[in-house]
Image 1 (cartoon, one colour):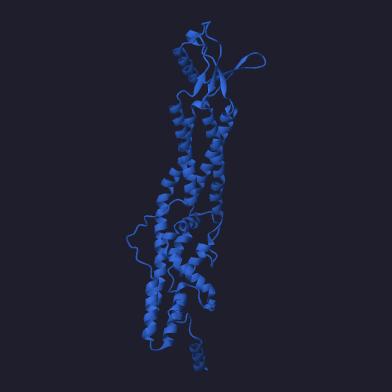
Image 2 (cartoon, rainbow, N blue to C red; image 1 turned 180 degrees about the horizontal axis):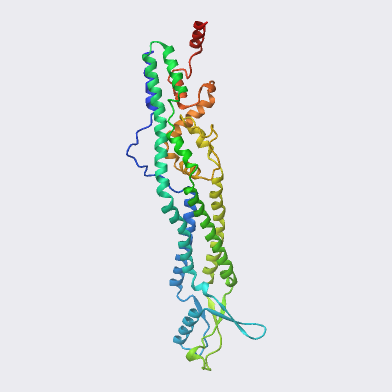
Length: 392
């Protein structure tokens, strides 16, 4: 009996989690993995394209090449290139013989529009960092700490029950006290459950999360409109007709009315436009998936922690509409599952509980660890039968 008692003590001591008092969980993730992917692509991709556009401009020199008249000197040809790049206007003749003007300014504004796109895509990230991360961080620190503490309290409670059972000379007294404690709910620590229930009535975190993803969709739609309205019209235009007969050169007869220029950076413009459309199209399903995850509960995580005393959000059907702060917290608990040391222990206990032949006697980790420690989770039948015989 002493050997069995010692083995049970060792088993329960090994099941206790290490004390993390003073630890601030430096590896806490305050962004979901998919949100990080969306952030890196949405912000980093236009910055990459911007560096490509600037590199091409610096390495190739002038982004256009104009076919100046043969009687122009080298300095005059350079002036033509510079003037046409500054104007960047295409003159085309319509059916009535009138010249229409079409601006090609998106070529000149390409690097700066990419920079503006990167800044716009980073605004939802800043919104999340300043409006949600401080509150979310404190919530996660408290909940993770309380979940692990609740598990440890259950193990220490079983240790205490084992010591009382060893010291008790009358097993009837021990089981009567144990059943009384269960009826009075002495084993339950409802602080965490009530805190999570309060989070169901809070909507600050979920509002910021919805706003973040909605802004991403809005900026992505604005990108489509910009590409379709300004880039598509000049996407295949390799050459344009430039007029330099302005101001002092207006009355010069040796200067032609129009000079043909070629866009040497058209390939970069096409690559940037096409790749931007493709990449942001691929991001849209990820953003929508992030929003749809708020419409369902992570019941697997909740079902595992149902083994803790006073953590029965599922069994009591306390979960209502999933669009609230509690669902956001559950998503981040799943992302920070490595910080939840108790999760692996409770997962194992859930598997063992499902395979045991005494399922009806096991509801919480206290019941299961009581069984593993060598105690019956409920009063043995021979003691119950003996009490009934004495009353008869």
